Length: 182
Length: 161
Image (tube, rainbow over all chains, first blue to last red; front, top):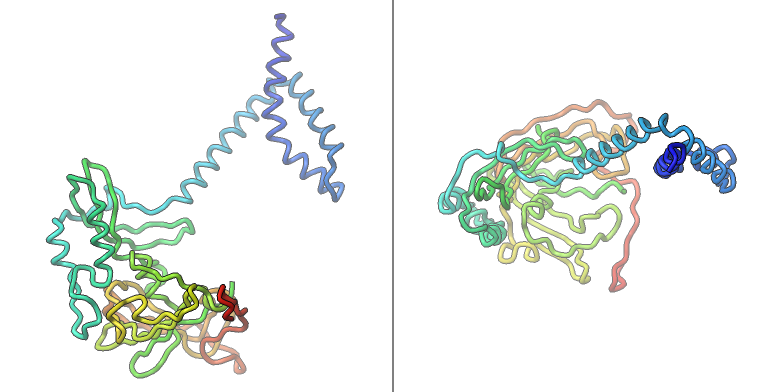
């Protein structure tokens, strides 16, 4: 294949992402100018983008790479903002046996407003947590100030399963927003 | 969203509107949550609790809830066998009791501002600190105490509204 044909084929291939990148901008721009969607004008613009990119594609390569990089960065940021809380290794405080935790967390209310059991009214949830623990689990307490997706800081504490240096399920006992405190 | 119906808290012999939901924390920490339904847009959580500080401890003493089944929820519904009072041992947070005239009305959540907030801080259900936050002075004709400007009543499957 002659050199100039190879050049145009590469340009044609690169025109596809260029049209994809510019399609929205072109459509919005034309629609705003015409105060209504303008399919014919948009089509002319896309054809122009394909022609220009096919011929002058070396000029557009940095632009396409930049767009790819920013869209990846935005996606990564969006995913990090949607993150769900889980304690990390750096949040571990002390290790305990189940018996030690249960002895420490028995609720004792003089007015009889809670069962005299570990975690009181949350005893059933605790029992369920214990049944879900993988074999060989070591339990640790954790405490961390965590920033949620709305950039609000929360104090979070509880117990977490540690298995083979990995973090497993956790049982939360404290979760409040720091900015609300007296 | 609409401004929300507050919980009620009896503290030192006086009933307050409480712009905090300790029962929400209970459900958030793993407590079983019945299927509540919203009776109106000012109560999306589907229940209103009455709380009381007795001997420095926070108790839930009454609950009126609306269930999807059409039945009414009480303390017994959420805490079987504890229909008289429930010690809020799971609760570690600060509750806000707005006081005085309204300074700014916000028709969302508990967003309105009042002249003062009495803040009670609890750790595992025990009162550990109290403080007052001054927010400013309301207009002479401003309404006194917590209020909701408007709400929309919602029906349920069984036709109740």
